[in-house]
Image (cartoon, rainbow, N blue to C red):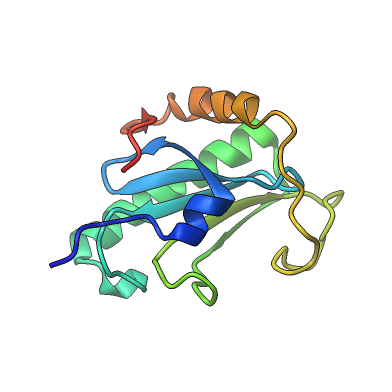
Length: 144
């Protein structure tokens, strides 16, 4: 059985913030959208339904906690949650706070505009770690 490893494309496009009991929490390095990604720490998993029933429930709880946090601290008009996996086969769950003023509104964000990296990524990481520290089960910077 293989060990969990973060897909190289996710590692290249994100910054790890920490982890929940099941999932790594990543920040997408695109300042156009507040965008967090959960990656279950399970090897060779491509789909949510491939997880055990207990892991499915845990992922849903972690996802809802992230969505609630984003909605409350950002006053987002909509939280888009998606598990596409067309480009990166490793199961990962996107959480994107959307606003009618954002660059892609009302269209999906994927492929709409090239990413614009954070000028101060370290500050953004610290801010999200502070926010996430209020969520039960989150541990900062323990990324595998």
